[in-house]
Image (cartoon, rainbow, N blue to C red):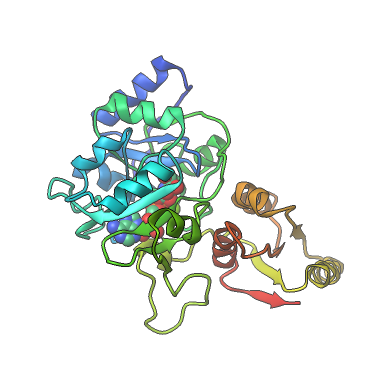
Length: 332
Ligand code: TXA
Ligand code: MG
């Protein structure tokens, strides 16, 4: 059982980031803003500290964390070897929403990688995140700072709601610029594979590398049989609010009309229904998790969401939306 502790709310001043870094050095847990979602950080080389991330989140122990670094050279402390392809991706996309899965150095504890011989590495964009890592003098293992299975936090209030009393501190930054987690690309095989889609698309990776990049074939499909995703975290129930979620796909006008008709009928029967539609894929990425949380806050029974295009980063948005809905989709 977790013992309740007092969670410090810190600002983004030098002084407060310094305090946060002291907590990391002492083996504590600090939530911090990144451009994707808020992370829940611990010293990546302190197995005991990383173990307590899993406890605070209620996260399955075979789901590896992402190791965050403050500058490119620090990859040498994490990765067993750095290839030319890895270097190219880093130059093109770091700091930014990209995690590369690489062979790990023996110094990276196995609890940090969920028992795998590979490790996900990311150099985040926000100043607060990089200052925290730099001042801590280590690399920071950080999954998203939500209770396992809930939508990822895109504001410090979301983190507070899930983690108050369970972690040592929260750095109170702004809202996250992208709102969905980083693209995860496996660089351990000859053909790089996108394990989790994000703002940086397979096409973008492929252009930079000048070669084919494939998508994990399990992405954006109803899971079946032993067809399991390669990123351990992608197999778990995720982003799921309490309300029943339905995605309305197909012709956009028909989808909207169908949502409205069904919502009206359910409301007549005494249910509360949240109907969500986004202007474009970027807005959907930024707002999806927050809207799912809002709907739960006001205790709705049903959430209806209109699908966005699967083009570009829309593929990543649909990945999260389909999971939130448990693949409950109505084609219109
Ligand atoms: O944007 C992000 O990546 C955020 C911020 C905080 O940086 N972090 C994040 O972490 O989303 P998390 O733990 O919620 O998701 C990590 C994902 C999981 O699906 C996990 O299975 C996968 O990355 N992953 C991490 N290391 C891996 C590895 N060695 N092999 C395969 N998948 C890995
Ligand atoms: Mg997560």
